[in-house]
Image (cartoon, rainbow, N blue to C red; front, side):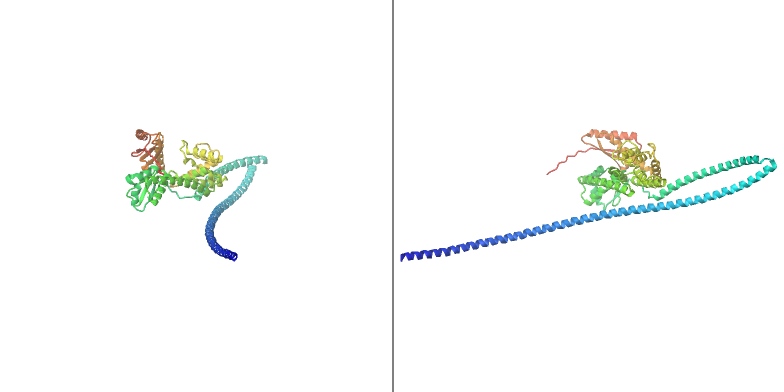
Length: 520
């Protein structure tokens, strides 16, 4: 009985243990399932967030790619439009040239017809004279036979001698008339060719000035430009070499300099400073440096544009830059680039009329004054220096000779040289094209700066105040204060002895030392 009870107790205990174990296991599995479910939900949520980020990133990339493709497409379209426009311009120019040639051909045809009619009239007159001569011959023959009792042979010989003398006299008169007509016709044709070329290249003559006007909104800006104790305006004048004139003129500042490049740098720099509002010496230095780079880029673009407008190709980049530099130079008040383009067109037209190559003539005309805009200052005539530059950049021998010989510095060895010389004279001889006074003034100012540059330690020289003041900037590490004073004294004596000028010239020698460090 006890055994049975023990067995029943064991069975009951095992059952209770199983129930408890099952309950505990069920709770554990339930908690683990909830944890797994929670992890799954978190993983799903994170995956959705990652997918959303990837989606947004891909959308942004697609938009950027679309914008890039759109920009490239627009750029391509613009380039194509420019090419089409350039092609249309070339076609129009060729059409105009063909029309002009057709018109000239028609004129020459009419002239040939007129000459033919004139020759026919002369032939008819000659035939009439011949008939009259035959009648006189018959009369003379009859008289000779009746009066002189000459033989037919004798009469014939006498008549032949008489006819020969008359023919010689008439021939001499006719030859003289033909020579005189040829001389008159040649002079007339030459004048007609020159006049036609001038008419076809007619441009408005505009003289270069030495003063630029910078407009401002109010007089308050004048004080900001001057700066405390005049530091701003002194900095601007020292960096640009331009005389900044601030007077009682309302809403205007005058920029005076003989060099158009300096005036343009000063004008653009002032515009940027006024627009920015920050006007102080350090900012002025920064803006002037950036403006100088901008001007260099514009000069290169001007040269390229001038060559494109004239239809000149395959020119060296440095040579095109010098062509653009001519925009900021003048000759006797006449803009040098405009003058060179005019000479190029004149040379092209005359070369075509004379049966020469218009392209070579046009290229020689454009480059004939290239020696006036050197990067350095060679002690050579501009024609010789221009020929050296053309030779350096592999121009044709005819062009080199035409450049060097247009002022008779070297001997002419081709027909393009006198053509360039004549066209240069025609361009400069237009009424109002040049003025002698400006050129003399510019030469005096250039001489001032060149004299100052001969002294050791001198870095830059600027002639301002219309040539009444000379500012000399010296290197502080090479020149002492005592030497700067001596340079000012010696320079004043040298200018006084070597130059002729109105009034007096103030010489200012500037020596300054700067220490610059950066706090990082």
